[in-house]
Image (cartoon, rainbow, N blue to C red; front, side, top):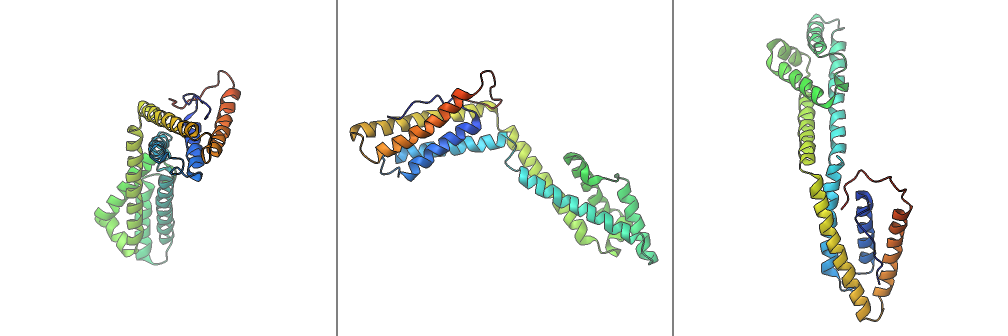
Amino acid sequence: MINSIVLQPLRNSEYLQFITDTLNILSKNNPEALNISAQYNALSDAKDEVEKLFKISQSSLVTTEIEVLDKRRDDAIIGINLLVQAFAYSADAVVNKHGKTLTAHLALFGPRIAIENYQSETTILRNIANDWKNKPELQEAVTALNLGSWLNELENANNEFNLSYAKRNEELATAPTEKLKELRNTANSLYYKLRTRINSNLDINDGAEPWATTVNLLNQNISTYTLLQTRRTAGIGSTEVTG
């Protein structure tokens, strides 16, 4: 028979790994042959829902995308700054004038735009793009110095960053702790149903294969997590939601 394990004390990351390990063992031993296809699929779907919400609660869903887009817009504004400063040293009087015009405008926003916090940088870059596109003197300078593609890149990168950042905040706002507990409770019930189904098949088939090997592997996995719980120092709990 499959050994018992108390799922509630497992931290969210441990819980997800336990369910994943369980599903992997069953997958390798053929859920159809084990006569548990429906129960296996139901638990797998429930695990996916828990994992999705857990990732959101850990602010990990679009963090990489945000970092990439932030670097992209940083590169754009740093590149623009270097270009206009170089133009300001040009021996060509017209180029020199336009370079100084744009350099002076960028100086209004401070010397380290790329290291501002996310929200501040978004606002600053939006203002720069709007000014360069709509103020005649700045617009003339951008055109004369052929900086249109740089301006487009700056604006596009900043807009894409803002959309991704807003998406993350929206996802975080829809990831309440109670919902994660609810999903874990649902997955727990499905795990117990799956365990009962396997135990019943093992009993009906007098310990035959593939149930015997599968139960042995599941019990080895369970013992790992039971030992983890046993060794956890009393009084040092998890800050994660459990259920």
